[in-house]
Every structure is written in structure tokens, then in C-alpha cells.
Length: 371
Image (cartoon, rainbow, N blue to C red; front, side, top):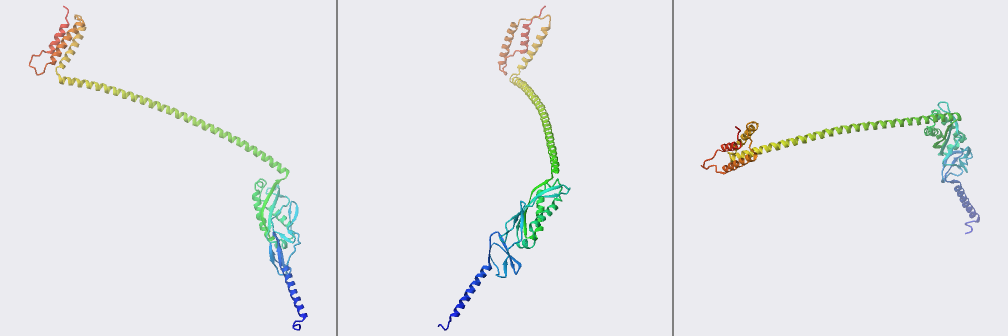
């Protein structure tokens, strides 16, 4: 057995296994790259840019691919100081900002305006930021100033104060178009301050003060005009209400007079109707009495004749007036006789005395003429 497996063969085989294990270990160490969160690294293959690896475990080809240790000066400016965008050879992916100093720019009417801006951005393609732009801070600041100068030149001094949002949107759009080749994404643009120099500021302040005074006077005059309008409308309504009240009073008075006259006419008509009804009822009673006792008409005519004789005697100078008590006694006797005659049956054959003659005799007995 010892002859079949010499000692030298076993040692070389173990050495081979060890060499293979070491090679695999080196390949694993060289081929597996772990990128921390919020960072990105650039992989070069044979000295040229190949790909970008992002947070997590990444596989590269050892000895052919190499992770670039970024040494380029890639910075941004915050509050006047440069801040690096590279951390331990990796590109920082977090949102960054560019805060350049305020710029003195010319507006459309040649007025000088100080504009202070802040640009928020994020790195999308680290390879472009590292390889395609040199001195990113200066280039980005120059781009902001150039774009801002073009946009401010579209406004005059009076309108740019109120055009802050419009100016920010226009600046953002201009930076987006120009910064795509640098591998960054402009998220938003804020206009911190827009101001003029001291003389212009004083002039604008005075003009603003005059404008406020003018507006205050205009508001006061408008309020006075509204007050006068309200008073005129109130007087108009009062006049209308007064006229309507007077017209209503006249209408009510006329209606009252009409109702009063109507009631008077109805009362007069009712009274006349009642009188006519009374007369009619009287005539009806007379007609009924005459129908029952036809001789009563003779007595009625006798009374009328007596009344005429009495009137003529009263006007005569030769008449002798018998006292009323005696005449009343004779009249009572005549009335008893008349009543007795009226109570007799109508179909009796007894001799009837002429009532007219008896009444005349009675009246003649009452009156005796003087010689």
C-alpha cells in the first residue's frame, strides 16, 4: 500500500486543494461587494466605466472589474461653504441643496434686483456626475446664475415682486433641461428673497405708501357713497310706504263711505218696504172687512163727510159749537145703534134704518145754527 501512494503525491494533492480554496476565497472577497445604504459606487472594467452598484450585495468579476475609489472633488455649496458629495469613495444619494450667494441681476426695465435662491437636487447617475462634469459646484452655480438672469430679464421691477412662484417654476424648468447631462435631478427651487438696492427700495416704499393712502381714501369715498345710497334708498322706501299708506287710507275711507251709504239705502229701502207692507196689510184688512161687512164702507164715507162738515162749520161765523162732551155722548149713542144694526143677520126681512140718515140726524142734533 505504501508503494501505491507515495508520500510526495499526498502532499502535492493537499497543496492543490489548499491553493484552490485560497483562490476561491480570494475570488469571493474580490467578487462580492457590499454597498451601504444611501450610497452608490462606480465599477470600472479594465479602466473604463462599466456600471454603478447600489446598496446591498453586488457581484463583480475579480481582477477584471474594480470598484473606483472616487477622489474627484465633487462638492456643493451650503451657506457659503463647500460640502462634499463623496463619502468614503461612494457617491451620496441623499437629497442635496445648492445655496449660492444672492445675485444682483437686471430686470426688464434695467432695475437692479437682488435674488437669493436655493436649489434642491438628487444624484440619479453617479457616473455622469463623476466623469462628465468637472468642478460640479462651480458649474452648477454658474448654471443657476445664468438661468436666473434669463428669467429675471423677462420681468420688470414692478411685477417681479409678485412673480416669486412663477420665477421659481421657470428656474426649475431651465435647470432640469440643462442638468440632465450631469446625472442629477432638480427637485424644487425656492426663491428666498427678492430685493432692490436702498434707493429703489425707498422709492418703492414711498410709492407703496402713497398707493395705500390712495386706496384708503378710495375706500372711504366708496363707504360714503354707499352710505348716501343707503340713505336715499331708505328715503325712497319711506316715501313709497307713506304714499301707499295714504292711498290705503283713501281707499278705506271711500270703502267706508260706500258701505255707510249702502247700509242707509238698505235701511231706507227696508223702511219703505215695511211701510208699503203695512199699507198693503191695511188695505188687505179693509178689503177683508168690506168683504165680511159691506155696510162698513157707508160708515167710512159718513165719517169723511162729517169731517168736512165740521171743517166748514169751524170756518163759519154763524155756527154754534156744542161742547165736546155732549157731542161725544150723541156719538156714543150713534155708535151703539150702528153696532146693533151691524149685528143683525144680513138675510133678515126686518126693516133696516138707513145708517146714513141716522148719522146725519145725529150730527144735526149736535150742531144748532144761530138765528
